[in-house]
Image (cartoon, rainbow, N blue to C red):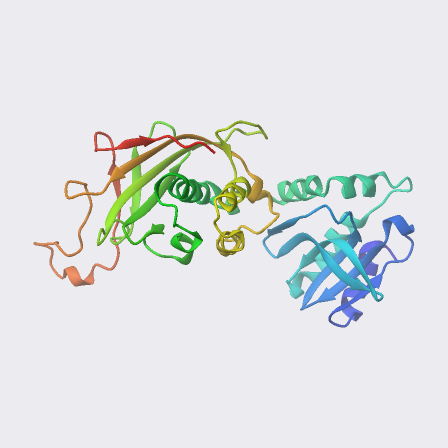
Length: 314
């Protein structure tokens, strides 16, 4: 029986919340087939200092503690929640667990598991599911700026963007809508919905221009979700609340997206006043059946509007 067939057999026969060791591996390369909460998985032991939490389609790749044969083991796990494709998934698991006689492939996997994950995703294609990480970066940059330079009492609860609110950051005295861009010289922003710039309170539109450096780098203007959360924690913002909000946006703790770096090129504040170009749904004179207009999305050219460039030290 080859490895893929053995995994398929164990998938079929394992009861929920149980694990079965695969025979034929040396102790250092021990491997298990696991079934838990209707997920089918395989796992290998890995250094507990390594933290991973990735997902793609119905496949997850992460580290966690599992109870195996009455012993807690820190495992690197490849799992799928799609029961209908469990036999096909077993073939991927076999490639994951495959170990030549000299053990070099498993040693490389245990040292750098993220490389295996990236190679696997590149093989099947992942371009269409990239998360809008730079959008989250922009909102955290503004939250950091406000906490450090404008209002000391602002906290994680004021960041309302992850809750699906029309305004990204709300305070008692003023609200802030944040737009992030990776296009350096474009001053056009998209207003998504008629309430996004509704200024029932004092409101500013904050534009954060970012650059993807392409490689891991250092610099005072380099930020990531992970580094911004750490900086905000240093200012007294509750880290657990920030983590929960970022996770709610689909960017998990210990994931590569949280470590992805951007260079902050420019932060510009545009006060939204009476002369700011926006669509007021309460003033649509001349439009028939205006009550049937449910949502409006439009673009605004910010060129020439009143603004102030913000300097931020991270």
